[in-house]
Image 1: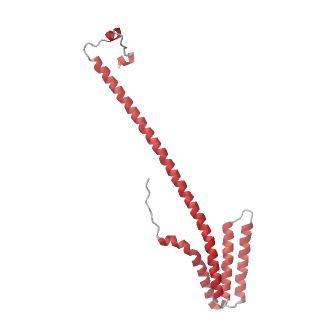
Image 2 (image 1 turned 90 degrees about the horizontal axis):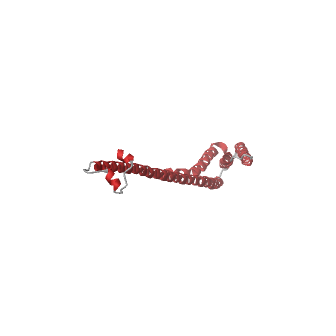
Image 3 (image 1 turned 180 degrees about the vertical axis):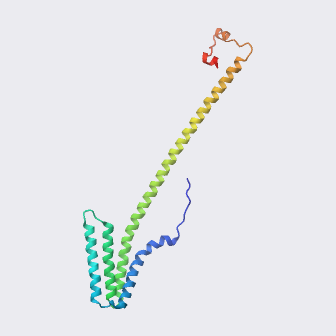
Length: 200
């Protein structure tokens, strides 16, 4: 069965690739806005972000080491820790090179983690597509075999009906012949038709 071919716009494929950079850039921009709003050299603001970063890191570590292991929750915890740390440094420091350095490191790490997720997702999608194709091919093969079998049964039934019709017509035509004598045929040594054939 033919399915409609759909084409994805290039923006739809590019959008997920830009998410890590957009996320880290948003954190950096908000932190610099916070810096201009009074967080520069503010020990209290920096300590709050430091406490949040350490707490998120401990939470991510605890979730990663648990017996049942929660990899998604652990990744969220470590991501939150990195986000708080980047925001705290970017908001506290006066110069821009250090926040930009941390932003670049955070962006690279985000892409490393995202690449792993994209690779697993692509692998699962490929396996699903292969299983779907195999299932469709198997179903198509079964349908083809059943169609051939049904056609063979119909053709066999039609051939049997045609043979019975031809036999009945031949018997009727022979019985209508002038001078037809079954006893004479039997006396001549020719095989006589069965009684069922005579009755027909």
